[in-house]
Image (cartoon, rainbow, N blue to C red; front, side):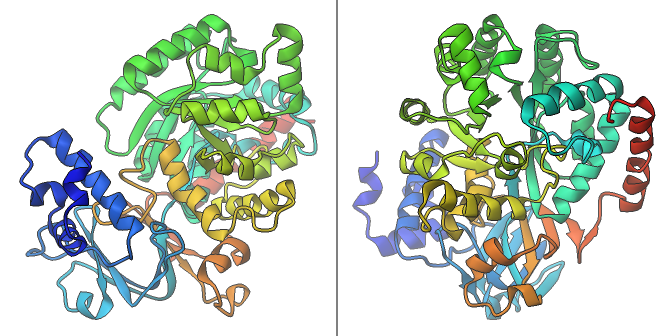
Length: 500
């Protein structure tokens, strides 16, 4: 059906699309076809010269919020920075981008002036283990397997509980919000507790319930993990902000029958699947020695690669591996700081991008990072890509920002709703104050955000138009209480002697 819009004059397309959308302009009533045509139309507009979209909602009643920043970084189109432009929010969605002089004349419940700030999409942390903030610093300077087997797993066996998950998740959410994250993907035990805390804090999330073939405090085996996870998915089936998918720990911690079962369920339910994969060369070598097959090949053979698949780490990749990812339209989640700290390896982001593979960013858990700062993560990713590829032009600032926003949105299957500041999308956005000395002078806004920020520049954060951080203060979480509860855990760990 693409010929329907190709033949229309571009001026008419802009007018129709800005006001009511192409499908509406053509009087097409079928919902599926309407959506299909409008998506193609929007892509065509993005390839054309950029003009401010017009209002798509009822503007008779006062707007919920109008933000007047110094700059707007919409992400789409790439590298575009808007000045003298304001953003209008109605019913939790971006209703309009228009000249500030016009926006100042509009009725709104709240007009917010941010003369030193850039307004941009909220960051998407595509992989983490939120409760592990309580394990921050307990086992540093160790390689992955000894870190896991000698420190983390024994501590988790002794201490993971609903209270552990509650306290650790709250600490993580506070840190994530103050660092610019508005959407997170999380994999950990007792995900129902994590979900409750996320819901209370107001962030957007993909929860992938952990699947592992050993007994834990949460579940006795992989079948129990799946049963509990499916109940959680059913509970949040129609939730506006929380989605639930499958989180396979790794190919070495589950059986082939478990992989097959998850493959069947993810296909039947059209559910997301996230897995730690090719995290280290040793993982790949062990799989080849034991089974004569690389972990990615096993996952592919089980039918687990596809557009809803999120492969985390991916530091050890052959050309064949990259081809498999590209052919299946799978996503890669890059966790550069965690991989560097554990000496796990380097994800070849430049090669993946050249192959057309979507790459998102994640912090991993605070036990192996030790921060949950997505600004730090995208800066590290940009620098590391240049070193890994010996190409200073690899992963430029605009591409790094896209990984932390639209890249994450695509990986989580949320690109229609978040990841960019476009009319009709959810008002998930953040404001960064660029007036500090470390970001002066402002020669290049994108460059300053990626290479010069410290992570302390965030002043405001919204999810679905709801303000969660105002002037640097958390509105839905009690920082004093969170700090108090977190401070009790180190003494418990030390008393056990496990962390020594």
